[in-house]
Length: 289
Image (tube, helix red, strand yellow):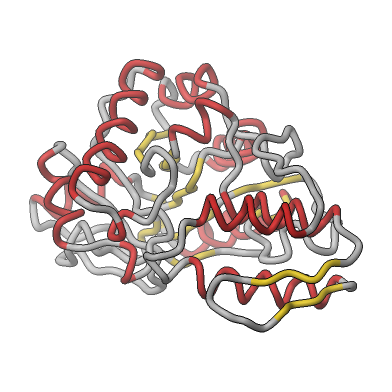
């Protein structure tokens, strides 16, 4: 099972997309070509069906998944997938689509990209952090990711706003840059109407689900399912965890998803799977380029 986020024609800025969350179209095509030469594409519905019936999948079966709901999934990736005849599941963060909202870390990257130099302080350290080069910016971004994504006491939205203030930049929350733009509801509906594709949930605001109390968790999941149903006409059976590493989900999260009729929710933990693996702990191989 493979995990993608975005597919763009080019990404030539030194800081934005330095993690290569968005890969270029040529790389995407090469990956899909290699996979189809070596194995058999399957849908997430097929994975659930084979698991339920305790049937083996085809040899070297693989599934393609894309997280978050970037517009380039619709305008770039979907066409490549159609050309190869490969099914895919698009896990959509509903607030991202509803308001073209950028994630908190994309807002920080966007701020750093516009700031020539700055000295900032971060909530987990008294040490000032100074940057004036792309390398220094990336080092601080790595530090921010490592701390903020694993610490439930940090409000990541407040962190993003504070970093922008310290850099003397307005916080940009929506952008039509190909690295930021999200699908419209019409585009989500269009993908949902293609037999090759499946729409799944990926929370409402991309908060780490295991960090939430029961009421917050309920709102995050139920709101996403409501919007997918009433804006895109999708009865959601599939979900994926925001962030997706071991600290990002819990038994309480899994139980609530099951209560909401979710049948499968892969992680972002790297690795391969067998037919007998828990459908709520499946591993995915992240692809960056």
